[in-house]
Length: 143
Image (cartoon, rainbow, N blue to C red; front, side):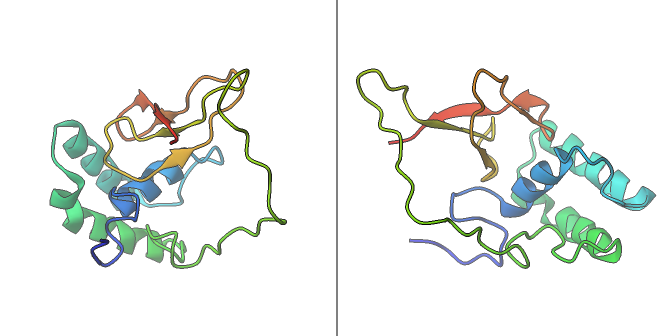
């Protein structure tokens, strides 16, 4: 059963806005285009999370950061669900099957399980880092 929380918790069981912030911080294009206040909010949120606070305890700070992102021209704020369309899949794709002579299937996810960010692993590439906790994403087997 999924509980409606105003977009704060995603269907994967993590804090949706934290996952979106983490994803945006990995963007190689650089700055989010935020002013000093927005950058201070990001630093405050990450510091509090690293100190052990839960994302839900910081919802007021996430609200303020979302306002800063909207003011800076990010139409979705911290909610990618608002304007990001579902990618089109060109027909059905054959899935690799785990078994004899096939590698086990897995994804990379939040190292502490706080958000729903999921990445596909690269071939022999090091795991990408979580910019919030400064740790590599963890391997999660698919069942």
